[in-house]
Image (cartoon, rainbow over all chains, first blue to last red; front, side, top):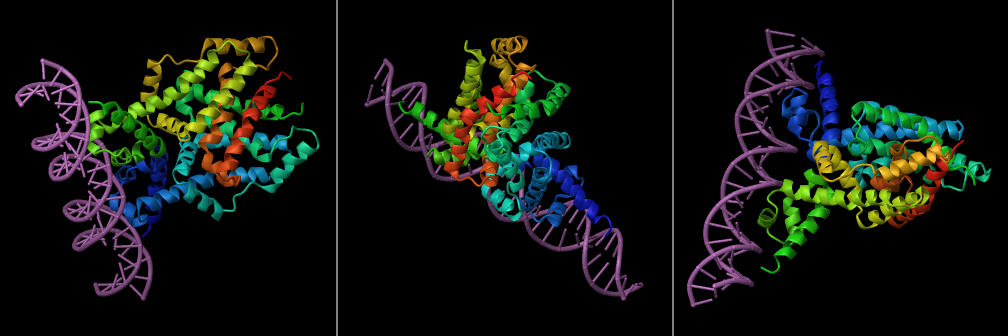
Length: 202
Length: 202
DNA sequence: AATTAGTTCAACTAAATGGTTGAACTTATT
DNA sequence: AATAAGTTCAACCATTTAGTTGAACTAATT
């Protein structure tokens, strides 16, 4: 009764990589067992079923993104700075979790209801501080008429899409692995510029 | 020997919806058979295997997007107009093929090599007309220093991301089905504005 | 009408997969 | 040392799944 936590953690760690890489349907309990160097029945001992294990992995995945993003949105910093922070957050996160964005987005669409329920449980909703901040900028005439939702959508789109479409980007732009990551790094400064200049009033 | 084409086409049509909705691993040959109102062995009669059927569906999916997009990129119209055309193309396409973007992006990442080979077969690469057009604008000082790849990436990101993340957008912004599509429609004019204003020289 | 090629289906098979069981083993507690 | 609680595993099991088979049927060709 000393290594049990280690075993459980190892299973969970491996389960994360397998589920994120292969998706729920593509993942095999046997593969998780093999890579965790344990017997398949251990999976069911620690996590009752594939479904339960997946659920935990998925929720951990969402928790790795949403609370942090919403944390940034709530910070008491100028909108400009906030945009930079969001962009940097996404790019940092992706470096350590290449499959995470694709995994979360895909599985979310596969089980919308589960996701909605889970989001309901957490206290996740667009922070009013952020909304008010965008509205204030609009009101003051410092940026064009735009809803906070659209404004945020633009930032998130510019950040995540090149990550989700990694294969497509690499293929069509003929980028090997390092060139692809350079391409992403370039966007750390590019995105805030486009986003902010793009909403300047006419 | 009169309805055989009809049968084959019906199978293919159904296979498209099932594969696009559930993905390769999630799709079941039985479900395709049921919805096509035929026996499961007919699937293997017309399309040798799940793999082959999927391949055809996937390639048809790619062909529904890439050639058209690259067609637009090749047109002899001003860059401004081109941006509008791309944005409208994505939004029109999504209306009739809700699961297509998500499907193609996801399966592409699952089998990068297959995709690269397939793209190699087609003559898909960033049209030089487009690249030159962007470079010319930069040279003339009408837009900031930016690579054609980054410029295109921005447009595609702004268009596709809200489609890929439909569930997330609906959940976090509390949008029902019509409100979500209104949100998308708004972007037809919003995206070109942001994209073009965003690259104006300082 | 007979022949032939193409089409359909019910029943089947082999393999894979998630999950179970019960015994053996380990470790902490008394 | 004895007991109890938690942990590990090899061998199974039931179900699902892609794929096969062979006979029956249909329709065009001669």
